[in-house]
Structure formats: C-alpha cells, structure tokens
Image (cartoon, rainbow, N blue to C red):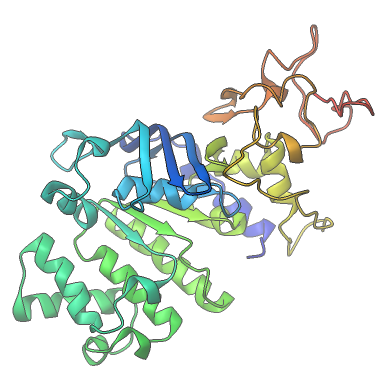
Length: 377
C-alpha cells in the first residue's frame, strides 16, 4: 500500500502520545524452534512485546521474520514440529487475574476457552481458514455455541447480527452461503465476524488484506479499525506493509529474523527511525505526496533460518555494520527516545567511539566509514 504523507501525519497525533493503559498481553523472551530433517529452524529468538488494553500495536517485517509465528504462539496453535523453548505469554483475563499461556496445555478446555473467547485471530487467507463443506452460519455458530452457550435460532440470529455488523449486504440471505459463494472481500468480512463472535478482548489480524485488491483492502482495514474502536478491543496487526501500519496502530514493533529490532510510537518510527533495517523498510515504500524519493530495495535477502548469521542477524545486509562487533555479538535494546527502543550497536556504548555522541545513520556527518570494513556510528 502506498503512503500518503498528509494522512500519516494526521494519524500521528494525540492518542500515540497518551500514556499507555495497563497491559492486557505481555510476551517476554519468547524462543521457538522447529526440529526438521534438514536441521533446526530458529523461528523466534527472544521476542518481547506488550499489548496495552484497548490499544493497537503493529508487528512488521519481511516474510520469514517470525511475525505469524509470534501470533500462533499466543494462540498455542503452532505446528506439531514446533517447540516453545522458553519465554512467557501473560494474559490479563477479564476477572483481573493473570495466566501464562505457555503453562496452559494447548489442547486443554481452558485453552479452548481462551482461544476465541479472550483472544481471537483473523487469518491471512479465509479460504483456508473456513471449511469449504460447511456453511458460514454453521462455522460461526460452532464458536458461539462453544463460548457463549447459544444454540438453535438464538445462535443463528447472533450470526446474522454479526454479518450485518461487518457490512455484509442482506446478512439473512447470505448466512447459509458456503465460503466459495462469497467474494474475497466478503469472505474476509465473514472471517472478521467469526473472530468477533465471542466478544474477544484481544484481536490478532495476520496480514488481513494480502489477497485483496486495493479498494477492498481499504474497506477491510477501515472495518477492523472501526470494530477495534467501538468494541474496545486490543489489536495486534501483523503486516509487511508499513503504509497500513501508519493508519492503523499506536505503537510499532519491527521484527527481523525472530527478534524485535526496533519498537516505538508510530510517530517516532516514521519520523525518526533508528535501526538500519527500519530505515530500509521505509525507503522501500512509494509515497504519493511530498518530496518523492527513489524507491530503494533492501540489499540481499532474509537468510536461511537453518543457518542464521552470528551476532546481529541483519549485519550481512547492513551498510552501517561495525567491524569486529556486529558479526560477533547480539545487540541489546537501547532507549533512544520516549518509549522508543532499538537493538543496534550504533546507539549503544559498545559501538560508540570514545568521546563521540550517538548519531543516526544516513544523516550528514553520521558515518565514520572506511573502505576496508564499512564502519559507521
């Protein structure tokens, strides 16, 4: 999605600067591995983020960086070969109690109550999430029956109400349609209806507009934002599209190869990005207004997850890498502004030359570079 500078600036005021409410979901140092015949896939390597109650956060990054795996870990729907090695996922429940979802058996009745009842998900492709041999009504009714105890005509009326809520025309006439009878946009709306069926407190939207054309994308995103605001939901939006994030969330987490490399209020991420990866993502997005800049693709590609590079995982693609440091050690988060943290040696005491202040890459006078080792700081 292309970014409109005017609309972005309009979205970067007020709420993003307000003090965040109490967290409803806290993910801390989450590590996930896949045991495959080819080797071990290091899918998540210490992911941490917080979802404040009633707020929207974004998780962005290229494909293969662990965004969806983080969501699946929260819902405990990882593939059989995946193993959660360590970490915590703490959910503050409606009664005020806190539960670590990693201590709840994924197939237990308690986890089934949480999954859908407290945390729900809009999947990337509704055609694979819906069963092709059951009607929309039957599939949404199953969730309502499980979590709300409604059955028969009461459940059917609730499904029709939900379909109308998400903007499906003639919901009473479409309630018995099969998924293949709905257009892509209507299927995604039905998926949103199913996610909202049990009034969850946390809604995860995983690339909710990937398979849609731009007009339908905008409609679906407006719908998600409207539902989030009207129902007081906490929203986790997973996407590779920073243009979408600019209009949808209050706080952004940028992920690369299973780690959060930068996080901050959406205004600061767009106005003052610090990590070279975040800067590269922003430079790869076309702009509709303002001073147009040449679109610059990110050099190289995401490394093979079987053989992650040592040190900072981004260093093989980074034009500002520090010789003798970035390839050897993993940078820890450094605070660079209000609620703004970045994991990069360019901003740490370790990577700073004695007697110099931290400076941002890509600005005049910033790089302390040599042709031999591409050093900067």
